Image (tube, rainbow, N blue to C red; front, side):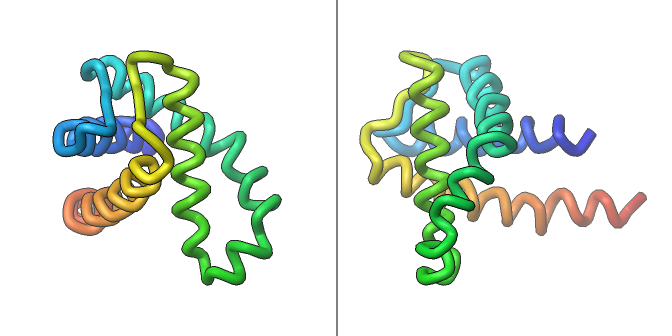
Length: 119
């Protein structure tokens, strides 16, 4: 259930970002769901490899380079999806990665944790 909830949350976050920024385009809700699934698969397979390869830089920047790794993962997902998911440049991908991290943290803190505590 946790993986499915993560897919749903990422779908909503991607749609919100696509709604506010012109450089971040999703063709619809279906594209957002597919992008969220692709992102989760990339986070399982590609992200650990990128983290290992860039570990010295990540340590040197006190973890801030993780946003760059997340932006690269977003760009890979956009590249895999073609015209259904487009990001206009690395700067937009970096901004989206930061916003996704902030929105996910807010949703976890104010929605998911209170619901889990009620059980």
